[in-house]
Length: 345
Image (cartoon, rainbow, N blue to C red; front, side):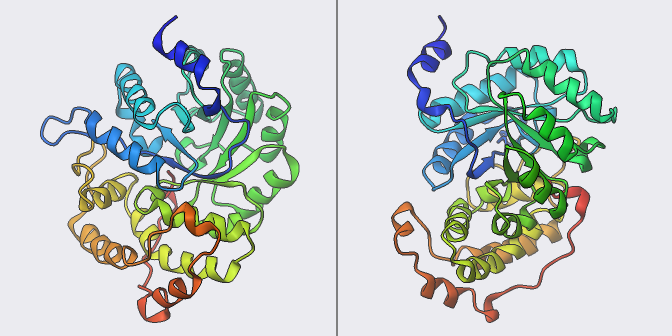
């Protein structure tokens, strides 16, 4: 039995049947100069996020530049994150691909890992029918013992996972949740009404609206810049404090829009570099955020960092008075144009 199999036997607390709250798809830090994985930075980032109030992490999602990582790099990164957060914090591994056989073979590599589940997107580029999508995911489910979170991101894959398809897949207990990043609140509502899945927002600009209509949480790339605020927003909505939630989200939105004004994850990495958490390094074809974008982001981030840090201790009595004062109209920055095809995490 390998180390991960031992960990799996001892860490059932990591496994979850429900995906709720705020989950963060981590960026993948690279070393400056040679572009190799910076595992030390990845472990520090994972550790910081795990203690920030969020509910789980995603490794090798779109935000993690998984398409530019070799298979052995993906495994090393996952191992490092699992080690950093300990046996009880939920971690999901992202898996993608257009060849059903290849994806099914890939997920088998993670059967002995102590994961909360796998995040799997629809096949990209080939644009299969809904029946093809169903059969693709069924083949993957037959190859793994892990829970599966569907990932609907048609702006990247070229195909939409319809609510009817999601509901059909949900009959199989492997499928427990969906990250919905289609940009449609109507489809989000249909998923809530027509499936048994936990429905997670994948469009950060729609976070407040999706939570307010009953969404179970989010997988938010932007959340790793100020994760405590996203945890606070989720808590406020769940407890019916919609006025405070609206004020908080209004303060968060300018930074959210800047974080997706250029292709993800370049702006998120720029923000994390400004915070001293990693080098501002990406792998081609991804390139760093523009100088103008970084200047605007630095100004917006400075405003956001003035908001009080929220901790689990604040759940009993959020400091709404202080919050509302800090996000008064005088402190709200103008929003920038959001390009729909660039804002998915």
